[in-house]
Length: 294
Image (spheres, rainbow, N blue to C red):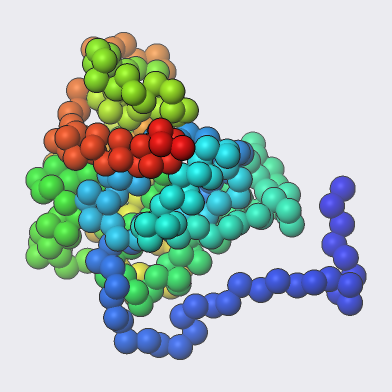
């Protein structure tokens, strides 16, 4: 059993509040991404690289990753990205201090802190980037918000702001199940030795169920947010707008939510393949630098 030491014996570690004083925004980034959290010796290397490169293609200049634990292979990838300046890693050893829940649903997943401190990490990330980035993307590493009428986030946000003028935009979740994949011959043969999922092989998504909760994710103005949760803000100064599904959606590459659906009930969605040439080139560049030229 974990015990809490007496106050006089404890070595308290505090994380500074990074936006205590108002700072006029001096944006170093147009878009930054918050990823929370890597845990359970996370080792889905290929999908991680693909997601980071998609964020870059769509317009991200910085990705902040909260790392509780990851595999040695993924750690090599993180070190590479840190050197490039694209990724900032916040070490998040929350399991050393409290008994965390290992799932999102209480009481099925009991613990002293919800899901590896995911909500605390997201709020830290909002404060961390409040005055340095114009827009903040709150998402998980198995998710990518992809425009349907535009090719990047900048054009998407210009359109949304002209149409709605909101500060928080939520995007509907669409599941691309790991269990259904397509073969593309030898196109991805070089990636076979890399641990993880190749999201480019997953081009079928489950139809959403209107009566079932949709776990949206967000692109927001961090200066308008006082407190956030995972799928929506809890306290904000600005207004929120759900983005229609014909403008942009969130691709979520994961285990199926509707495992009994027949194949012909899934929706073929090739939106990601609009970026295939650039994505494949960028992923190969990273893998070459990290693994193949060691």
